[in-house]
Image 1: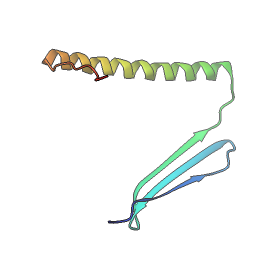
Image 2: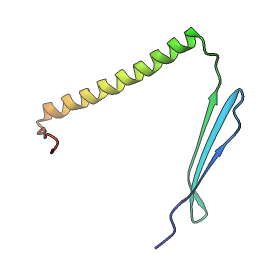
Image 3: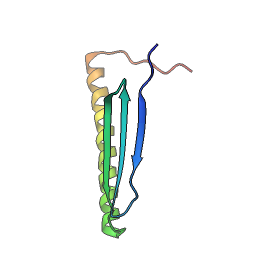
Length: 85
């Protein structure tokens, strides 16, 4: 059986920005490369309100999408099954 993927994480010291990088390779070939770059913002009432609105809108969008898909499945006649206990 072959060896699993090798993974590595890299964090750079935070300052005005923060960078996190992740790489996964298998047999010397990179199969996943991800990087997250974040910027520092002052903690003000305006920035907090904006963050709250962004997260709230994303949450509402996900819920609306889930229920929209449920409605579409119900209209197609897909049977509903309860979770086994």
